[in-house]
Length: 311
Ligand SMILES: O=C(O)CCC(=O)C(=O)O
Ligand SMILES: [Fe+2]
Image (cartoon, rainbow, N blue to C red; front, side, top):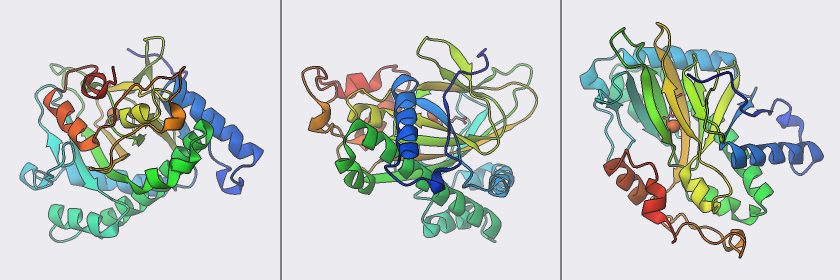
């Protein structure tokens, strides 16, 4: 079992008052980059999301997962890991539903209409509003990383060639004969993941090889760097391995915003990040193809290295 964490916690509370490029801004950029380089993960205190919105989304998520399976299974997608996921043999406690491009109200309405033919405006509003707010946070974190890596010129085009998916997740409390594993250890494949958990369960593998608990704190998100960002940054940013271990008798809910490269836009390391001291680690690759490869080989620990390793 993991122990109380030493994961960096970065305070964005006074971000709204900070001018980009000011000393305060630069100090946050440095903290973000250092956390991404050493842990591939950090917690961020972010007060731009009202507590009430978290509560509304969690309440709506409970209603959502209480819907009959045949309704939830209508959430299908041709893209890997985008639709309903549940009843998986290895992780029977886990269930999740994905909404592509959730900052776009039309997308959320289409999802809500599918789940609740008689409508659920409160959930629709909460999900869309949360997705927009986290999208903004994601953009800030990504900008800080790019600025600190000295490749800010790539920021606008990188954002434009990105996509996103919002996932709501439920983990049933294990019965006495169930395994406590909610989600197996994995690295996210995407660019950045910004996650909120209602109760504990999330654990992170530290650089020293120890599992740490990532404890939920009100108003605090957990940010993970994914393998697409790791590859793009030529290995400067780490993708953190994490898992969910259930404890106690409560069901657990979480939700996360995943930014990812658009299909067709290759993940390609900028030349500025390649030199004699940093030889190219990954050849350019298509993210959707990589995701399909991972889906076909989910237990491969080093799927990115095998799929796109440059040597
Ligand atoms: O539910 C959580 O806390 C973690 C979810 C996660 O790691 C994922 O969906 O990739
Ligand atoms: Fe994950």
